Amino acid sequence: MRFDIITVLPSLLESPFAHSILQRAQKKGLAEIHVHNLRDYAFNKHKSVDDYPYGGGSGMVMQIEPFALCIEKLKSERDYDDIIYMTPDGVTLNQGIANDLSTKQNIIILCGHYKGIDQRIRDVFVTKEISIGDYVLSGGELPAAIVVDAVIRLIPGVLSDETSALSDSFQDGLLDAPIYTRPAEWRGLRVPDILLSGNEAKINEWRDEQQLLRTKERRPDLLND
Image (tube, rainbow, N blue to C red; front, side, top):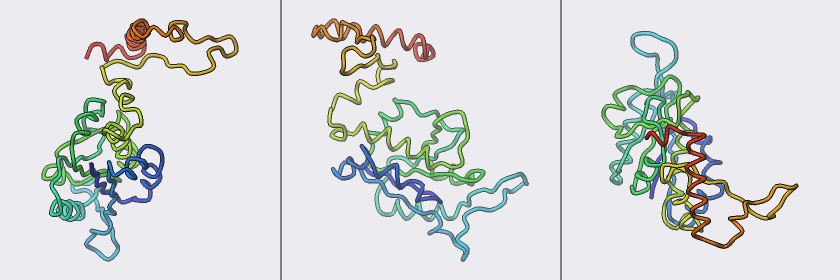
């Protein structure tokens, strides 16, 4: 699977993709992450990619031409399943969206900055608009890294335990059950006896009950959905 990320701050994305699961996925050849500097496609000597908004107002708007040139160059080299724009007014990222994206082969992610990008880029090129929550960040780079992380860990072979991602919170619409490891007792706090029983059927039943209880307490909206 290949991600092409277009940004004015490529160095901001160096660390998230150079460690842990994302690094291993790339070393295994299961994922490719390519970061493109939007300023390389600027059409002026100052390499600026923003301008004042028509109609007035505060902030600067990212120009259409640099994005168009970069996207068209990438599309001339391969077909893309989706071109995603990270924006606060997009659909909120959830596990279902991550699951769907993990079945794709090639994806472009556009990182906005300043006040946002020219609407015509969204109208002409973008196929999906995704938000990571009801708040505003300085740019789309960190949200893009979150999407890439959420998706790549679902690719078969990325995680050492193939069933791990399938048991994550939200995969079945519920939060995960409490989890424990050694020691069995710590400062008077014991691991629930059922988890030490070795009775797999009873353990699974307990986990199902805990998932439902935790979801009801913390995220009742998921049960409504």
